[in-house]
Length: 118
Image (cartoon, rainbow, N blue to C red; front, side, top):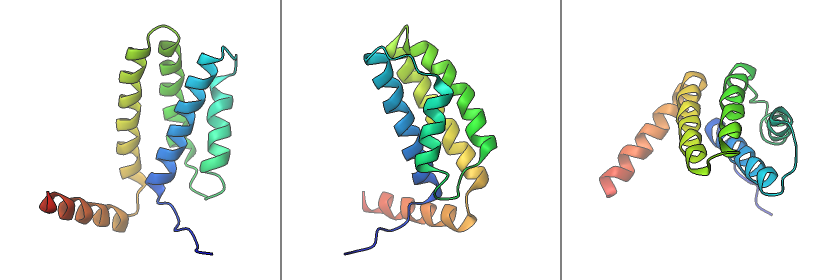
């Protein structure tokens, strides 16, 4: 049995955000009335708390954006998709503020290496 490599901070947060996206779409398609905060908290419990990477300030800021996007989802899916891209971009900026400098440097080196291969 091989051991899984640990996810980076950014990977964990992108998985968290993706699970929220899936839950929002699912609740809208099934017409299930669930609170946005409940969906976010469930995703946090699954993806962030067990790994010890929960940053309440970052999650709470995104919580407001996610709630606004959910309101848009109820009326206009294409506008929701646009808002979601903005949330993903905001997450990337927030992750840079809390990221380990070594991880940032490694990602920059990987990016440079992959662009040289292209």
